[in-house]
Image 1 (cartoon, rainbow, N blue to C red):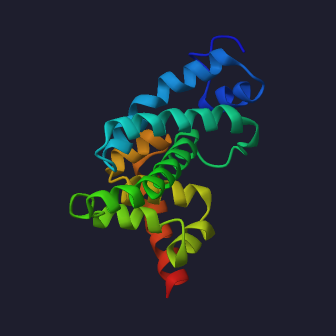
Image 2 (cartoon, rainbow, N blue to C red; image 1 turned 45 degrees about the vertical axis):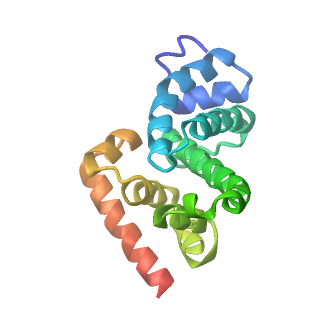
Image 3 (cartoon, rainbow, N blue to C red; image 1 turned 180 degrees about the horizontal axis):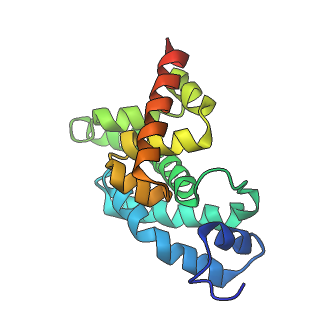
Length: 176
């Protein structure tokens, strides 16, 4: 691949699938900082967040060939990252709860995040198209503004608003 700094995210992922370490570095440089910040809003343990970011990019390296090109690459990376964080919270939570339950009571947000992958909400989210799911995740789960979500997903703000309205409607219908 020529200059990896100028390639699109999708081009970089395709090159990573072919084992291109420079493309991986370019993708990491573009996305690791925001992933670290966003995951830090979900978990107060900086060491755990840093491990999750590393795990996420390891998964990107290993799974680049499986990326289907549906949705935006940042949304794909975020999906991997948040699932890794949830998995880590699940694994670490029981031992820390036994040590000092009053210090490690999960927040409402942590409980919701851990529950997103199971139950009715997970099924409803799975039924959404990747485009609608990405907008819903960016705005509702990540707390981004419409403008921030538009920038992250590479789409106009009006498109974010329209997709968010459609996603909410489909979720309401699916959960009713």
